[in-house]
Image (cartoon, rainbow, N blue to C red; front, side, top):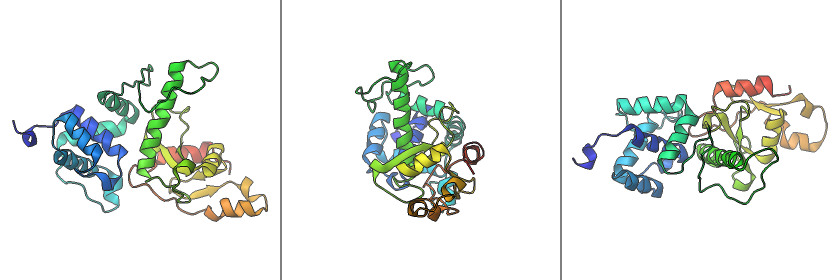
Length: 258
C-alpha cells in the first residue's frame, strides 16, 4: 500500500499531537527538522506529517479563533484522539512520550528522559526517582508553555529565556491531573512569576491582570514601574492553548490576595 493511502493509527496521531504541542504554528511544515524526524520514525513523508499537523491545528479553537486555518478535512479519528488528549492531557501526553521512547509514567514513576540531568541534590524525604519525575515534569511543561507563548512573557513581552518561567496557574501540588497541561500555564518573567505564585498578582478569567492592594499600599517608584502600570491590562495571549477559565478562576479566588 502506498504511504499516502495508509490509514493513520491512534498511536501515530498521539505522536503528531505531541509534536504539535511543542511547535509554534509557523513551524508546522515539511522542512522542519522535527517534522522530518517524526516522519522517519513513522515511515511516512514529511509532507504527510506536516499535513496531519495542520489537520490537528484545525481542531484547536485557539488557532481558529485567530483566523488561522489548518487543513479542513480532519478525520473522525483525528477528532476523537484530539478530544481524548484535550480531556486528559497529563495521561495522554505521558503515553505519547512513552511511545517516543522517553519512557515516562509519572503516576508510578518510571522516567528516562534525556532532558533530565543527574547533577542535582535530592531534597530531604524524597526518593531519587520522585525527584527525577518532578524534574522531568517541569522540563516538559516548560517546553509546552514556552512554545505556546513563543518564548515571551505574557505580561511584559520579555523574551530573554533565562528570565522566563513556565508558571502553573493552579499549583501542581493541587492538581495532579493537569501538571503537564499547557492550558494550566503562563509564561512569566521571574519577578511576576514570584508575585503570581504568592498571590500578589493574578489573571482574571477575562485575561485581565490584577495587582493586589498590598502592592498599592506603598508609595515607591518600583511599585508603579513593575506592577501598577500593568493593573487591568490584558495579558498577551499564546498562539495556542489559551489559559483555561477553570484554572484562572481557581487562582483568582483561592490564591490572589485582593
